[in-house]
Length: 279
Ligand code: C2E
Ligand code: CA
Ligand code: CA
Ligand code: CA
Image 1 (cartoon, protein in one colour):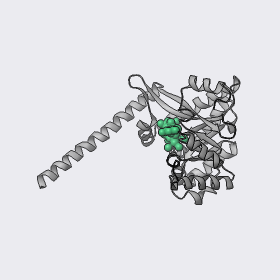
Image 2 (cartoon, helix red, strand yellow):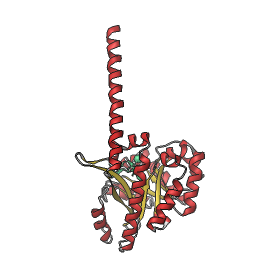
Image 3 (tube, protein in one colour):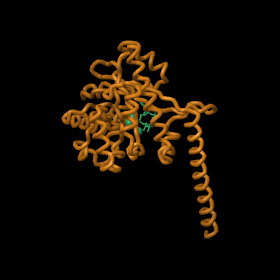
Image 4 (cartoon, helix red, strand yellow):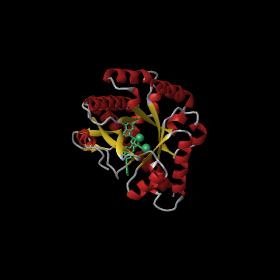
C-alpha cells in the first residue's frame, strides 16, 4: 500500500509538471500570437426588446491560429489573464471595436453601441483610463457609444482600486455593464454604490426559465430590482422563443443569444446591421 501511495504521488507530480509546462507552452504561443496579430474580433448583436432592433454589439475575441483555425476564448483567456497577456489582447479588442464602430457610423450603418469585456488586470494598470481616452481620441468615437463589461467578482476583488476607475470612466461618459450578474457574491449590497448603467442576467438563470423554477423567480426579481434602481437589463444566452417571451413579459430591456445570432465575424455582422429590423 505504501508503494502504491508513492507511485500515486509520482504520477501526481508528473501530472502537475505536465500541466505547468502545458501552461508555459500556451503562454509562449500567446506571446507569439500577439506579435503576429493573430487575434480577431467577433460581434454578437444585442436586441432592444421593445423595437426588436439591434441596439448594440458585444465584441468577443477569437484567436485565429494559422494551423488550428479559430480558437474560442475559453481555451486561452484563463492563461492570458494569469500571465497578464490579457492586457495587450484587450487593448487590441478595444481599439479594433472602437475603430469598427466609428467606420459603421461614418458609413451610415445603423448606430449601435459597442460592449467590450475587461478583466481585473486592466484595472490594476495605473494608466487604463488614459489608454481609453487615447483610443477615443484616435478613433473620434463618442464615449457614450462605448460600454465596458465587468463582472461582480472583478469589482469586489479590490473595490478600493476599481471604484475610482469606474467613477473616472463614468465621468467620461463611458457606460458600465455588470456581466454574469447573479453568479457572484454580495451583489445587492454593493449594487447601489457602483456607477453602473446596465446589468446582464447570467445565462444560467435564463437556461432554467422554461419551467416554473427558482431561476425564473430569480430572473424576475433581478429585473424588478434593476428597474427600481433605474438600471437597464440585458438577458444573455437567449436560445428559445419561450425564453424571449418570458423576459419580454418581465419587461427586460435587451436580449442577446443564439436565438438571434451567434457572435459573427465583421463581414457577417455588417450584413446583419445593414438590414433594418430582421427579427
Ligand atoms: P461573456 O462575456 O459572458 O460572453 C458571453 C459568452 O456566451 C460568449 O462566449 C458568447 O458567444 C456566448 N453566448 C452568447 N449567446 C449564447 C447562447 O445563446 N447560448 C450559448 N450557449 N452561449 C452563448 P465566448 O465568445 O466564447 O466568450 C466566453 C467568455 O470569454 C466571455 O464570457 C468573456 O468572459 C470572455 N471573453 C470573450 N472575449 C473577451 C475579450 O475580448 N476580453 C476579455 N477579457 N474576455 C473575453
Ligand atoms: Ca460579456
Ligand atoms: Ca456574461
Ligand atoms: Ca462569463
